[in-house]
Image (cartoon, rainbow, N blue to C red; front, top):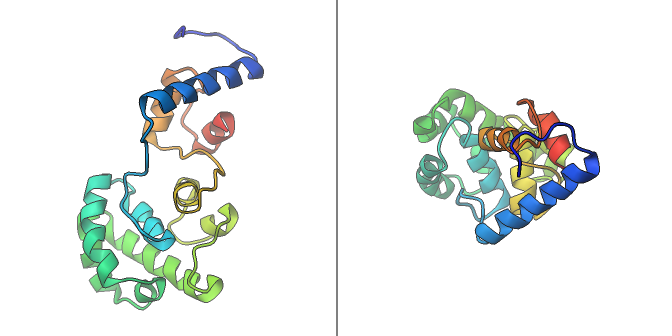
Amino acid sequence: MSRFRGRESKVAKKQRILELISLFQHYYPEAHCALNFSTPHELLIATILSAQCTDERVNIVTETLFRKYPTPKDYAEADIKELEEDVRTTGFFRNKAKNIKACCQALVERHGSLVPEDLDQLVALAGVGRKTANVVLGNAFNIASGVVVDTHVTRLSNRLGLVKGSNAEILERELN
């Protein structure tokens, strides 16, 4: 693959993306979500915590957190100061605790404590953007609604000449 491709047609770009997907599947056949979870709401919480934090750190924190708060109702009713302490080591702990509590309150009040299987309903929840919503849809529900665009996807997409820029929505649209 030439590093400098100039302008290529949409068909050629689509074909190149399909070839790259095939290569990734060949070299990384066991690729999976690095966050530990057993329910959709656990993945939602873990993904909220993963902002500006390593998956390894999130998995350490959630090991205890998921036992302490087994349901969305438990998070919704949690003391905010205690929840902040529970997630402190993930960084931005006040904001993350506030978002987790508000997110779970909405799950309880509007969704019967169930994580919605819809992108628009997910992004309406506190602390949930397109990236988090796509992680949850893809990994908890096996719904391929979009591309999970993070720093690494942005860097690789630019380096492979698939897109230019760093706007997540534009990258997702181009890669989808």
